[in-house]
Amino acid sequence: MPLSSSETIALFQKYVVPNYNRFPVALVRGEGSWVWDAEGNRYLDLFPGWGCNLLGHCPPLVVEAVRDQLGKLIHVPNTWYTEVQGQWAAALSQRSFGGQAFFCNSGTEANEAAIKLIRLHSPRPKYKIITFEGGFHGRTLGSTSATAQPKYHEGLGPLMAGFVYAPFGDLEAVARLIDDETAAILVEPIQGEGGVRIAPDGFLAGLRRLADEHKLLLAFDEVQTGFGRTGDWFAYQGFGVTPDIMTLSKALCGGLAGGAMLVKPEIAPSLRPGMHACTFGGNPIAARAGLAAIEMIERENLLVRAKQLGELFAQRLTQLQHQCPLIREVRVRGLMIGVELSIEGAPIVKACLERRLLVNCTHSTVIRLLPAMTLSDELAHQGCDILAEVLQQAANSTAVQ
Ligand SMILES: *Cc1c(COP(=O)(O)O)cnc(C)c1O
Image (cartoon, rainbow, N blue to C red; front, side, top):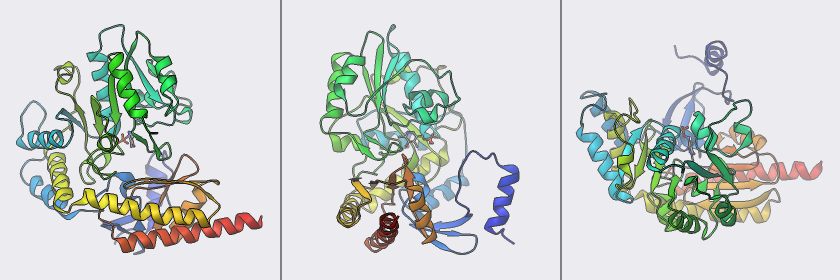
């Protein structure tokens, strides 16, 4: 007999490190934008897999490719060549800036690779990396140090040295921070955990100019923005500014664990043999999943679909903003969607959950949606209807108080 949600929760209470706040629900199955819990309840998921399930839950092409690969070769170390890793690197390179790939399993590992590459590539005294307030780069200590948000640093010090923080969007502040020791700039084109904050006009181009003037490397963390999310393969393409280094993960393998750092070919050799590695990086399962994800996006024309869906959400949510005084701002780039509220977002997320709609709150007051590219118009409207209802109710009860 499968366990009930409460039986599963009891296991966690006894045996799992309590470092996550979890909803009191055990999920057992997913398909597209639907997930089911142990009690058989169905939820509409507008935040599938924390951005990892950009192709929806269990995308058929990915499932099929992984099943096939599982029976052939699951893992071999990077002391060997495999065709699938080579094909995967080629496919990513051809859709981006013609770079070379280093593979890993997560976003934070991709950023660690970038940090090490930056240090190895930069002649001393250059080693410092400029990052941005409100940014997020992952949970290992290097990436945490790169993350300019005090709440993620509490109790962890001393952090890794060599990061300096600038306000997001402030080119003059960046220019002032650059000195003889500055090696690189690392930035998310759209801050995800930081509340879906879109780089202001000219900001990324300005960073590119500063990097060129001062011989710095420009690295984009596209772990959340990348791989089709914004309606381009990578967000940098929509901004028209090309980085030297780009990090990827989350949606990269259609929901399986996988990460990559892509770098311009002239920089790549600085990550020389012996200086960095990742045991599971670029394994055949992740590679097949990554290739299948690319194939699915192209076969089903999902980049165009992401833009269309983004317009639908932008329209619905802007309309809602006119009716609901709790909404301060709506920010949308493709399927990266933030609704900034004038109140805490956590109770809104809870009220949505009670109506079987899954959304996220980040940066305290921003309701974040990262829907699947395969979402139908009908389900997008359904989700917006529920969110509208919940927000209107919250506005009414706030008004009463
Ligand atoms: C999620 C995220 C990371 C960290 O990825 P993990 O796979 O959790 O290590 C890094 N950067 C950005 C922009 C992210 O959204």
